Image (tube, rainbow, N blue to C red; front, side, top):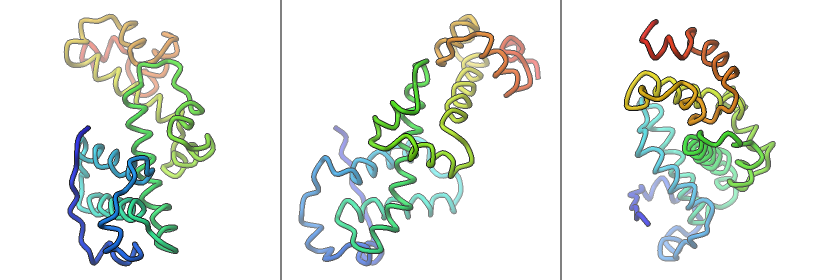
Length: 195
């Protein structure tokens, strides 16, 4: 298990947590959902740091929200933190899970929702708030992975069929149509470097 340490400003955390001094000396249970989401969120940020100062500030807000919830946020602060930090961290955790499981052709909304302890409708709402859907995100991620595999690295030597299956597509004609619609060229043309 990897250990992480956070340095948070007391002035920013104190308004969110009742009796912050007592909370800081009390252990946070390992099964605390906010702690799990915080850990996962920080891991995602380590892999893909925010690209702009505005995104970095938003990520910092989410971290404070999750830390406050893990320590025992109260009242209005808890509601605000759940709406901002938990929602964002949960979505990032779900996206990371999808990215780790793109190869699974049977990756489904209901199973993903259950794995993350939310209702399927809640999971849909997380994606809808970003202007997409679970299915659209999943297909886009699979197509992006297929494109990368076809155009670079050692996978260039594998057949297009093998790449499609590796990216979770179990219908080759659907893969070809979706790929062409998304990138404007066939998988063979992408592999050949035609633009």
